[in-house]
Image (tube, protein in one colour):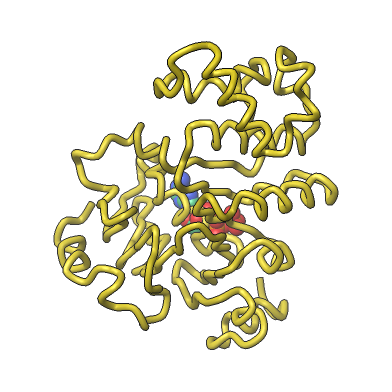
Length: 276
Ligand SMILES: Nc1ncnc2c1ncn2[C@@H]1O[C@H](COP(=O)(O)OP(=O)(O)OP(=O)(O)O)[C@@H](O)[C@H]1O
């Protein structure tokens, strides 16, 4: 983390600058002047945005504009990319997540992630969900672990389909079921934030609809950020939208406003299919 940039941004926390584009009154996550470089490539440029609590925010924009890069900043996944360098400030609940003293394992328990391609472990359905709570010490007994597995699968709308075959391998489920299993796995460690990187791009329309329904059901309990190429999906599932273009956050706003009367011509061009 570039400390000089962070300290400048720190003196202007979210609430103090409400009213600026991208900044909202009571955010769960704030980002100030975030830049990401992959070696010489400047992939994300001065991104300042607030992500509201217990709502869905969609990141949209043409391929390569930096949506996934920014998403991966929020749980420090970019730490795993050797060439990546992140500057600026990202706070969750007023805590700087790039503070060197921060425990990244704990951060990733608070900030769950669901990927484009469903990626269950090659283990049983039960183990897929039980793994996280076990390594984080969330259950004191087998009965408690069973309870977490059941409630997570219920929240992910998968319980009825798998309750009689929890010992079967997770990779044997259909693609849509696998993705809901991955959401159950994320939910099982009681995250506050769930990041979803094009979670439906490998799913058929029916499985997509089920995941979207699931997002709608759980959104009141979690802060959700979803990257999507589908503007219909962004319109259906999100309450706020952020539009990225060429590494710049062009505009954020309420979903309906972005899709009906965006302020910036680039947003207008993108949502009307003029480029992208
Ligand atoms: N690991 C990496 N190493 C080098 N460059 C990268 C890496 N990951 C992403 N980039 C580059 O950073 C830019 C932003 O990529 P990113 O994946 O964040 O875009 P995106 O908007 O999510 O794209 P898409 O919609 O196609 O997934 C692109 O130019 C991409 O080539």
